[in-house]
Length: 233
Image (cartoon, rainbow, N blue to C red; front, side, top):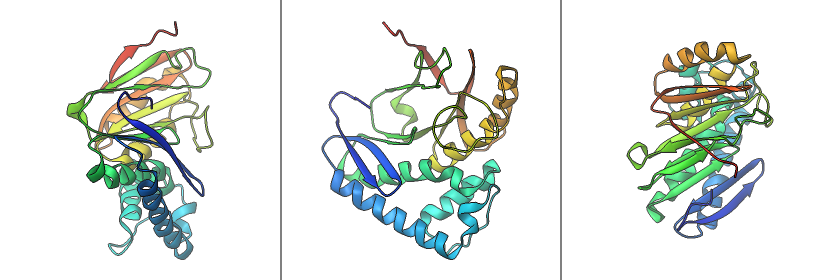
């Protein structure tokens, strides 16, 4: 999130904490987008509390807010609860909302990113106490953008996971789907021996473009995921 030529700023509202990079400081615009998104989601949850509580997909009607429908669709495809898609959905919505004012946008929301622009970006993979943490980067070409890069971890952060993976990173054109798929794959990875099964699970989720799984000192990748070693020196 220190992209040359871009201005990086933080947007915080309630539980949403974004780090955004753009060609200029668009904090007021980003803040307005976040407030609108949270307002829509919170109003929907107040009327439909199961949407926030369920660990399985929840059907919604066409009258639901756009962000709610995106989360519900991603949850249905990945087979998880709708809230597993919230961070990725917000990252994409804010990035696309800022796009008319900035040709380059990177939005990070709790480790989930949405990248939009014409430059290759390097995404460093943080995997807690794994010896591979911050030793591997994901190269995201301009041809892939706009694209989401979302990570689920059983070792880092507050997200619920039924597995034990240090990091499961998913690439998708959809922020909500990338986030939901990362949770779905992470749920079945309990150790290095589960990496092949996790990659097969990722392959079976429509809309997943690539995946990287780190468990202890092992790593596996599939699809368009292009990795590069990173020297700590």
